[in-house]
Length: 382
Image (tube, rainbow, N blue to C red; front, side, top):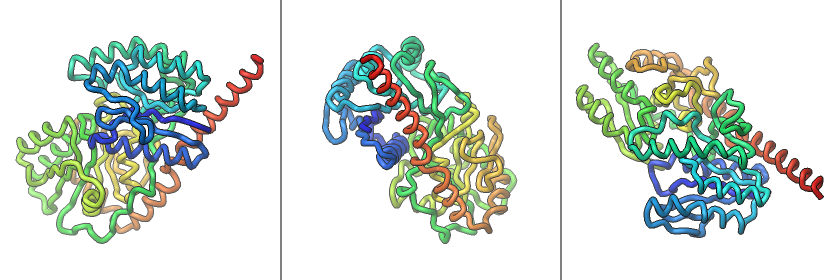
């Protein structure tokens, strides 16, 4: 079964390293499940199909007007059985022209919508609001060309009028090492958060919690290590400085490979997203939370996660509101699990429940069903 994954991400953008890791894991799993899938992506201002450059864009306007044209050419030449398209905001006339071509070819179109609803995420620059206005108009026509939507959104039977398959984010376990058990300090307590930092990560709640914590003159020194880049980073730096916490809130910038592994090895607890309520989400499927589990690091989140039951022993759920995070509660949570074989038990859970192969098998089953229906319909017309 031949497929193309149109991810449309810039693989050289360090801010998107987490998304690229997800895409690579999906492609690897899809191929292991019996498909032959190729990848379409950006590298800087160039569009690539696998390792072949197919188009160059000199500016944003040129890119917006022409990348779908290159996509149409790729689809015609490769002639896939199905395509998986990562939702590329905003939907516009070029999107529909591309999808119309796929329909002419009889291709099964699967749309991946990583966040839904997403309207509340679009804010700030006026052009983003213009994009949302355009999106609201043209996304109504997606149901004419898309046969299936894949999303982590739970209890949503259709998106854009198209049937959904709900899957949460998976992990390529082969790329993620277990945390070393022997590098945790008993003198200090380290919390880590790794992300392309945005307002919905809610890390300001941790910084405010540290401020409240240190007002009590505690015996244990607690440090918050923020790893990554992002639009919210400067606001967090200003907040930490204003509250007099530059010693205890450490900004490492983007880290990868062994450097990142060393930071994880020193972390007692990892901080997941604590502000999903700010964009209207009640259920999450964060990639980072799955990576924390795979490494064997207990984690803190604020809203429900589709893959972790409320009684999962290595997860602490805090209120999904604007209150400062109770650092003492985190210390108490860790104290209650530290004598267990944390790393082994969390890794075992990840192997059984979080792999991309397990997540994507229902999608492949649904694609096969849709292809069978198309074949039967074609025979009946003859």
